[in-house]
Length: 100
Image (cartoon, rainbow, N blue to C red):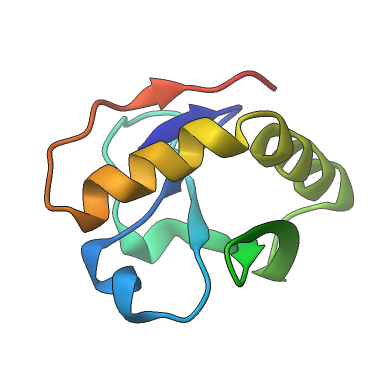
């Protein structure tokens, strides 16, 4: 869905059944551009009851990495939500590079 630093912010169609929108943070390997759910290192909630509310659900990242991702999500919140809308509608999405 989107690249930020050495991470990919991803959402999966099955996430549509969850009660809050969120993104999975996946570590993008330095040697390979391929990734999968097994590399998920954090999960960030991005809204609550349709209102922007960004918080960490869980994370194995450093405090600085968490802060960088929180800031990037806040800065790019509308774009991330448009991407999530496309995924949940079953539409193909283009992977974006987000501003830090």
